[in-house]
Image (cartoon, rainbow, N blue to C red; front, top):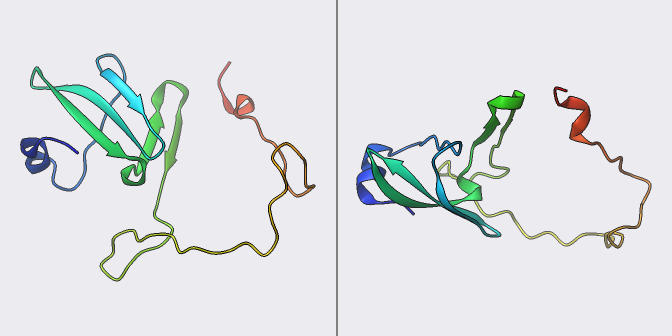
Length: 110
C-alpha cells in the first residue's frame, strides 16, 4: 500500500532505506509499515514481505536476495501449493539429528 503518486513514480520497483529518518515502523506477520519522507512530505507505506526482493545492511557488508519459489504462467509469484508432510516434524526444541545450528557471529566484522 502506497500513495498513488508514489506508485506512478515507482511502477516496478522501489528501494526503501531504513537508516536515519523513518517513523512508526510496525512489523506484522506478513508485512511491515513505515512512514518515510518523500520530497519533505511524510508518506505511510505498507510492504508485504513477499514483495521484498533484497535486504542489505552495508554497515556489515551483508545482503540477502529473495526470489519467488513458484511462478504462475504470468510470471508473478503464485501461492505455494499445500503439501502434507509425510512425517510430522519433531517438537520444537528436540533435536532430530538432521540439522546444524550456524550462528552469524562468525561472519561479522569484529
